[in-house]
Length: 270
Image (tube, rainbow, N blue to C red):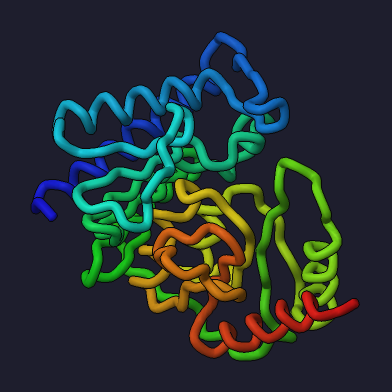
């Protein structure tokens, strides 16, 4: 990884963060549409996507970009060799469109199938999480560390739910198990921030199915903060654990196996 990339990534996320704040707080109302008829998109998502992609193309013209709002090419992601940027211009668009503060810009840089740098910026509360592979994780200028909770009964757990409402039975079973066995549950609406909150101890665990742009940066931040990041179901053969988007589980080393068992036990119910 080129030495300039971490600083560039952080500066770009901060600039994009200011852009989405201005778009929401400006005098013009947000223009909204629904991708595939179900997923909310605002004009600010598209504008921030274009801003980030243009900056990357100018600075690193040979790099590939995977961005949520610009027709991403998901082919061969697990075996991709070379430099790849994975972008979510606004994670938590529904929150964003409704005036909530739990939204973020997420930018990850990967080389040869491994994330080397990640930034998750929530400009509404002036919090920027960032990490570089092997160098730790930070919130603004302070190092962060995963929480030390060891008891499920004391754990605050976060999750989310899909836009497309198919068979919700497994999700409801997992939710019931967590509510019965853990202290409480949160549904905050921005997966990248949920994972970062586990990384710095505001949450004790998190599980969900996601898209790669939701977690690419945050999973590095969590790992670098000492969290265990993985999956509570087997990862399909030939798919990189780094980019597998289903059955994601994040917690500290003590809670991870307990959450893993709890979620699988819930799935085994008939």
